[in-house]
Image (cartoon, rainbow, N blue to C red):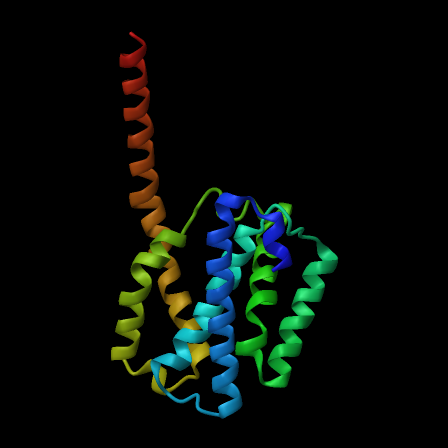
Length: 188
């Protein structure tokens, strides 16, 4: 494990565990693809997500050594496309996909996105109930899975925005005011 020589002694166990979990989940996905045994069960859904999560965790443990840029990001995008084009995307794409997501997230011009109205928490909170309502309305039987996901996102976006404006921002203002009062009392 040539990577482990560069990791401080205190973090080697964590990095080794994450690497082994990543390798196991990716190997399991690859094995299921080769065996042709992916079917409509939870394994088909969970293993690829676990592989992507472990790939992101692996990159996080190596964040001081992993550099982001336009050229590596383009190579990661090509690797993801190539993996998907071969039909082995769920097995081969997790690491380049995780790198691509982190690269896009580190773009300086993207940092103002969500700085005024961060609707992510509202989408997280209200996403599941909205999807359940759409499923009760039999929307998934009329559109493909990605269409349903897009429809659900469009349906939950206004709730996320309202949550941000009517609940989260006022709560943050109250919190800041309380913290200022506590700081003034502590200083007195």
